[in-house]
Image (cartoon, rainbow, N blue to C red; front, side):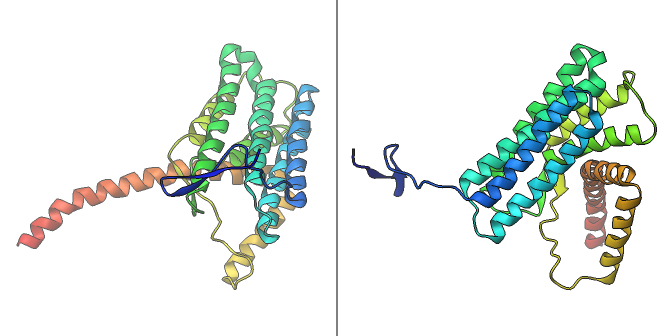
Amino acid sequence: MSSEVRLVHGRRERRSDEPLHRGVYLLPNLITTCGLFSGFYAIIATIDGAYQVAAVCILIAHVFDGLDGRIARLTKSTSRFGIEYDSLSDLVAFGVAPGVLAYKWALEPWGNWGWLAASLYVACGALRLARFNVQADLGAKHHFTGLPIPAAADTVASTVLLYYFFGGEGATHKHVILLVVIYGLAALMVSNVSYQSFKSFRFHPRQPLWILVALIVGLKFVIAEPQIFLFTAFMLYALSGPATWVLGRSRARRRAAEEPVAKVRNLR
């Protein structure tokens, strides 16, 4: 059957029987697959009770997730297939894997509240990815709406690593704070709170000296105490959104309170 094309509201619409361009870009999609495998192995490690290994695999998946997009842009191999495949990989590595890890490591003693928290985390992660894909069509932005799902997964993983770094052994004894953290991360992912995307930062132009010094100091902390540094960095990033929102609201109220005073002064 020959392919057909018709115009709808002046736009070209592809019929379902029109042949599509076949083929995919290998390099970025292979890197995405590595991230997918890391997330899946995190699930396997969680089932086997190797919680620290699972946490490390989630962090490794984030490294692959950061590489695939950059390599696709550098090699000009960005495609819609790659974007969708990356989202599916992210759902496994940063949605299902941290949800299973959080449940088996800390939430299982809570019964229904525990698995509901883990499942809510996965559902909110999926919603966050769907919203990101829709907003990505509007163009690149310097801010994310809602906590990015990789950052939420990193917060869970770094919490596990910090627990064992300080000598934690066995179960986490039904700590309520861990239950609250999972619910909080789920809420932040689907919230309208803005988070810095760091997309505007570039390494190749000249930068102030203090940025280089800060990066060197941060690298030393990563080498010396990676568990503490990673937990602090990811937790501060997760809290930066609500903190910015609160500051913005307070400034808006202050301006609203100062406007009548300014009008009175202008009348005088």
